[in-house]
Amino acid sequence: MEYEGEEGWKTPIRDENQIRLNLKCPPPPPKKNKPINYGAKREPPKNGYYQPPDLELLFVTPPLSS
Image 1: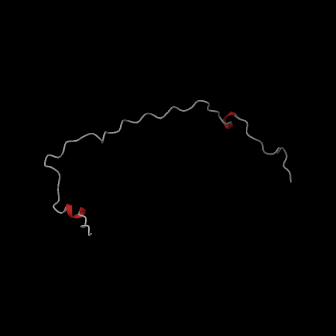
Image 2: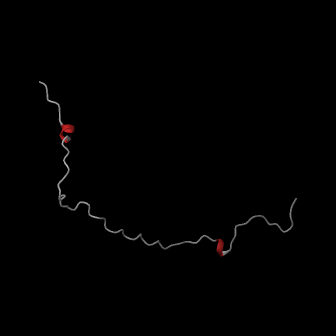
Image 3: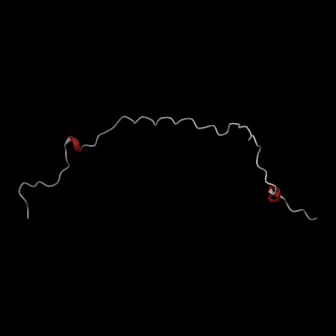
């Protein structure tokens, strides 16, 4: 069963169907802002640091037995 006027499939040749060659590279991404300097020296707290009374119990090593 063959249809009249049918020539089969062929690749579209219109300009809108053509693959465009983009020869120009895109611009580079913008530079990011400088990060906040977290390593800057800060003054100690006015009221001092909290020192829990039992903190040394966590770091005590058992006596060495000879």
